[in-house]
Length: 166
Image 1 (cartoon, rainbow, N blue to C red):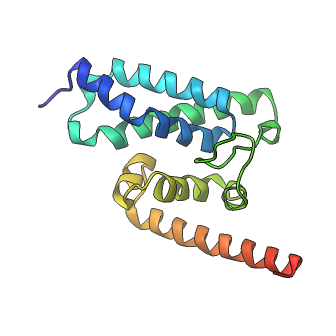
Image 2 (cartoon, rainbow, N blue to C red; image 1 turned 135 degrees about the vertical axis):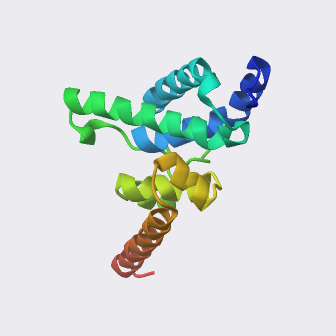
């Protein structure tokens, strides 16, 4: 079994930290909470580094931990306040955090079970198998959620075009 050294772990974390933040922000819709989720995920990953059996699977492993941490924050918030009180996120690649593109607003309007696979597939350029591993779903489920999300986005865009006469 090949175990990552602390230096290798640090290098990989530095490589993925911005992507992990954007993934957490996609779930939490709040930069402050996303930072908390990523910090906690990195801490937990470091503590359980010896449980990583395949060092080649580091990326899906740390994404899974980050997503779990983000959902833990959502659960804590759910008990404290309505989920609707959480702010919207901007476009993952936007220069200004408060200025989402129209497409990112449409993606944000998708339910979590569709938004997260769309984000990982299109924004993080992940393979279906990696997304399936991260989300703990069969690959076919990820594919169908992506297809349904694309269809829903298509309907939203067409509806907007009709309303605004484009």
